[in-house]
Image (cartoon, rainbow, N blue to C red; front, top):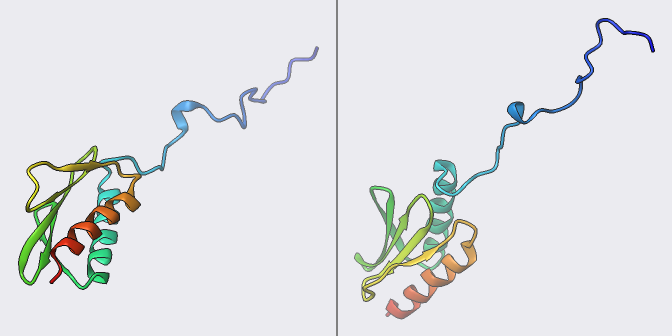
Length: 110
């Protein structure tokens, strides 16, 4: 077997140290902003308004807060004004989040 000089035996292989993950993880600021934007659009489509309070959103009906949407690193929390507890959803459950918000809006529409 001849010895080949100048050839890298590992050329073309991808090593774990050079790989970068571009997936959006829970708690990623871009993911939070993406969800905030989608939730604002959903609330607006239901003829309601939102108000930003820090990192959170308040859903307003006739100027009165009916729900609060909280963006945390591990979950999105939704709390209606009547509820004592917060419903927690993962960042992969956008449909469930929209359903919960719609349910709260439906209860409070006049």
